Length: 372
Image (cartoon, rainbow, N blue to C red; front, side, top):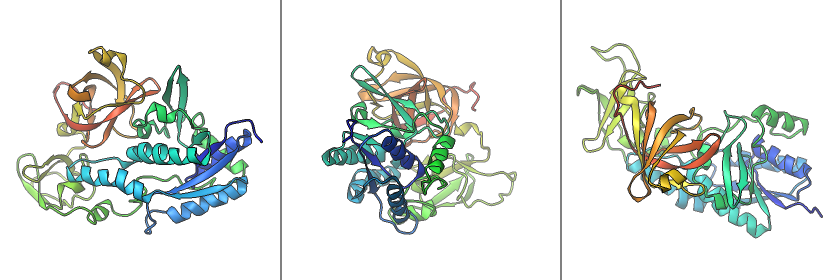
């Protein structure tokens, strides 16, 4: 029997988690894999295909595979919040809650009951121990780094977690998979939210949210069309507005610049870099710090750091101030485009992910700043 810790590997059916299992097996760990079902396959979410891919991987590796169904937990702890936020006119990101509540919450508890010493996933991220803290750092592959989606997980819940591919880039991952003849070596990376898949986003949401039509308007009040309900649109959105050529306006795309909930108006502008889409001030909800809040904020001062307001965005310099009840005020040195309520702002100190918060409001305060 191996003297190394036993590891439960969350096997999605993709190449990243498959290589994570491969590496741990080759290091001599007692490896068992588990495949989660969080959403019933309805033709758009490829749950059945992913499970079969996971089976093929485990057969090749010679390790056992368990299958668990967390659809009820996902519906209650993630999807319900997703719909609630949309109903409030925000644009939520359920992948963040999925990591906190399901992968490192429900699944973490299940793995411990199975007898695993460690839980492993195929996330592109790194963990380091400093005293009593487990700290989260960006993965080596900057284009695949997933700390944005992990920022809401407590450091304590990461203590018995390993990210075996965190120090690898994607090309290395695929090369290892091919060398080991894993059946998912060339499988395309999944994108977007599982339960939405490749289906039209608006059509999916209309199964759960009522339509509330209203006018699509320019800043000067010209009505250009009709929207289906503010919940179905997000700031900066270009596609799906149904606005053709408009007399008196140049032939350029239109973008959502504002959602006026009191009057049910969707405000659009014609420039991708329009001032109304450039925000340098952000107000957040309660902040979540992976470990403790930064010392500067605890002392009542401000924190100079970097932040991003969407996945794969370049980190931007900002100043963070503590507001009431654990909330934050954030001022970017240079305005960011379409900072969207309901999304997350995530804070970094170099490569270390400190934590983040839900964006509740954004605006342009400094007219002299040029947007990126």
